[in-house]
Image 1 (spheres, rainbow over the protein chains, first blue to last red):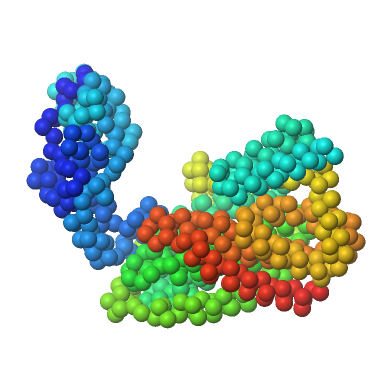
Image 2: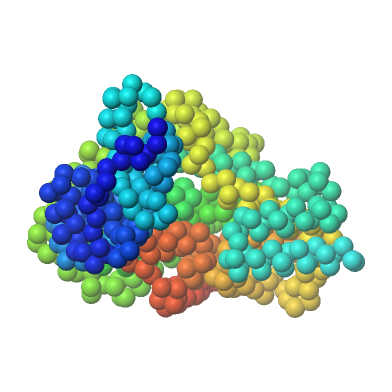
Length: 149
Length: 424
């Protein structure tokens, strides 16, 4: 089975100059976990995920901490995130986006998602965005097609 | 003579690679070491013979103990406890963090110490809403100063202890006193530089610090107890290793084996945390310097030094102290000390010095404290600067020099007075 058979088309996207606040609104309104950021020719230049937005509230040295999370000062990071609200997403988006091709197999994309710990992957054809596939799409495929991937 | 030139060429090439930072220092050292064998300066058997396995074993043993002990959170616990006791006063917190950093560095390696202290420092300075830079700079300085105090505190000391008959207790008796003086003196300088901006903290921030809960950090009490007991036994082992006729690596590896057994931690995971690149860096350097020894370059250098100092002990000691300090400011102190050790041994053989001990202390103080001079002087500095850079508070190379060079020079002056009064 190929990705084009299970992907969602009509992807919710945003331009690099959209504000963080607006993108957060998109995530909330459409109940999705990620918004691909595309240029004016519909090529993927980045992605903003719910995880990425939440991490704006967290200190940049989070990775170095272990077991002292309860000591973090919320006020400090709330201020920081408030500052980010009006920032264009191009300043905070993840720029190294993993994209897959519409002709790739589902099992390959499933492997990428699990291996890279990502929940959604933009689908492109010749570099242009044509869809998005999420873990739930794969679960759905599993359920409907009786593991025929 | 031809061989000597090749060996010298490999040595200079390796040093140049390390200084250029174009490739990792470990890659440079392995490359140089392999060339010593490929170009037939040393045969493989002799090359491996030059590796000081006491140094390697001591490093691996201590890294294993630390890898397990750090999981208990004891260092973060102490940091938060003292921050609360300091009632959120930034200067008092800086002093207590400096003390924890210095003591931890004396017992563990400096890089581990700063890796544990810097994140918790950022948590506290964020809570207090104060500039973390004075804290980070003082932790760099104190890691190197504390590390100077003991045989196991800093790589130069590990190598010196391994290459001589000087044991753990000798380092404590001869270096710890002057390190305590230097610690206090540097704190006074820091107070002078940063004292004013260290007074402000809002009432709200102080309240927040008071409410931090350090007990929650210690979530594995049984591992904590086991780690502390083994660490304590290992320290006792170090204190008596000479009496017991044990090399320091034996003590460290015994501690490591006991803790692996008693904690039940997965050795694969623990070994992942050992800095193998550092271990290979040491091994490579030992072989490269071995090539210099074998071909007579070290002998030549030693004669050169003697022709300058005319065999005068005072001149030699003070020369070693300052050259070590300046060299360690510019390059990593590990390759420098690896080169100096056979050089000093040779000085002893051909220079007729009765007692080399003051020269060894000068090398230890110069190389360890010299590491404070610049951001590249010691591994701990590089690590702190790296974290600071990635986390919004970059410490510039030149910015650090303004503090590093004068403070380093001041600590070397204290060391000079100490060595002169006590040994010469």
